[in-house]
Amino acid sequence: MIRGVLTVGGWTMVSRVLGFARDMLIAAILGAGPVADAFFVALKLPNLFRRLFGEGAFNAAFVPEFAGLLAAEGPGAAKRFAQESFGVMTFWLLLVTILGEIAMPGVIRVIAPGFAATPEKFALAVTLTRITFPYLILICLAALVSGVLNGMERYTAAAASYVLFNIISIACMLWLTPYTPTAGHALSWGVTISGVAQLGLLMWAARNAGMGLGVPRPRLTPRVKLLLRRMAPGLVGAGVTQLNLAVDVIIASLLPAGTVSLLYYADRVQQLPLGVIGTAVGTALLPLLSRQVRGGEAEAAISTLNRAIEYTLVLTLPAALALMVSAYPIMWALFGRGAFDTESARLSGQALAAYGLGLPAFVLVKVLAPGFFARGDTATPVKVGMVAVALNLTLNVALMVPLRHVGPAMATSIAAIFNVVALAAVLHRQGHLRPDAQLRRRLGRMLLASLAMGAALYFAQSWLFAMATHDLTRLLALAALVSIGLLAYVIATQLTGAYDLREIPRMLSRRRLRAGGGSVINPPPTPET
Image 1 (tube, rainbow, N blue to C red):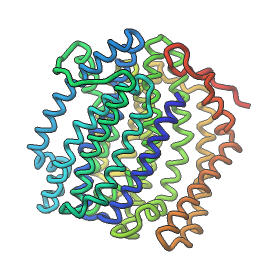
Image 2: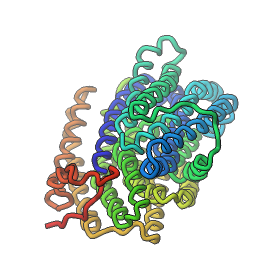
Image 3: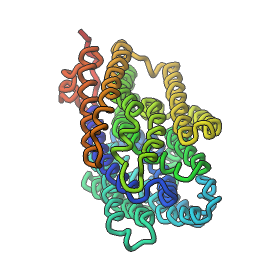
Image 4: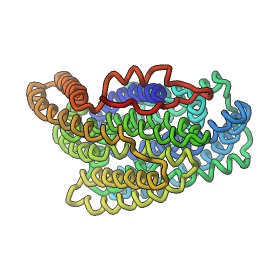
């Protein structure tokens, strides 16, 4: 599992870094104004589907079935299932795309009701969303092909495809803007063009892996019907975080102009650890858990989940504290130029701190959900997820006036914490989650090490940023702050025993890999000294 995590996490890190470069350009050119608000709403809708399908419901339903067929009946049966799924998905996604294009004004009234008060902003949001909406069909089909590759334990192309999104977006913003009415139009065209490139790359990778997919006539075979049944509830259950973020946009559109943009920039920063850690662990964990569950290895599955939680918390606890302690310096260093002024950085930093509170929960949802999906249970995450969405909406309404731009972020974090606690309680009651001695022992030590790192950041940032007066010096100050935090955390983990660096070579050792079918078999936890 750890090799899959590193592969997906490494490519996701490259994508996130390029994403920051893209967002820094957007902030400098558009700032937190009406064009930025309209573009971010236009990006939100197809991006919601990307995250739901690529990192949620489709992956949760498709990968276990595909991996099971591949192991039990061979590549031929698995390929037929993938082809059948591809045909049905193409038909329905094309229909949804056409209907969405026609009904786009009504769609915008739902996802950004506050824009209706400004006709020019509303019309721009409709236009830009119509440009980006074809990305929906492209990226959802790309998710299917990614599922094929992930089911074969080929993670590189699927993870690398997201890099194209940022490269093409940056290219369009720099070179297409002079030929379009606004930079928002150029960015929107970049979204759709990147979808074509991503799907093309993945189709090529699948063909090289011996799983070349065509577009057959759509047929609802028994396996496809089962896939759709499992997907339907999973759209809510696996994507509850994304649904909560969509609620944030709805509420933000009702707040003063620029709020949508402020939340977007803050969310982009917290998406770095969320994407690198959560997506990586969730992607690598699901195929492994599926094989262990199907193979009757109940204890191995519990051990795998414990180690996934441990790997996640050792990274997300310090990341969350860093986002809360250093929110303003982070936003000012990354985006503080051009149209994005100090006040925008301060307000967006407040939202980032609120998102940081829920970061461990955001990631742990991605870790715990495969515990249900691997057993074919998509109903339980739906029930929990719907309650979390209702809680998020209630908190948004309650907090939007007193906390303004911070309210949506705080509501999302609290809802995510509820979601992960409820999922963990259900798994524990079912006997599929039993925190072992190693996890219980290390949890408190991780928290102590994170607090030590947070103290180091708090005292270092004032000194570092007092000397940073230009764009380059602010970025250098941020790099130094990250280095100080990382060094402080590594030292603190060693002093507290939260983690032993000597375990890293053992995790990467080939002796932990592959018994027969290619799965990673986790040995019993090593005793601590």
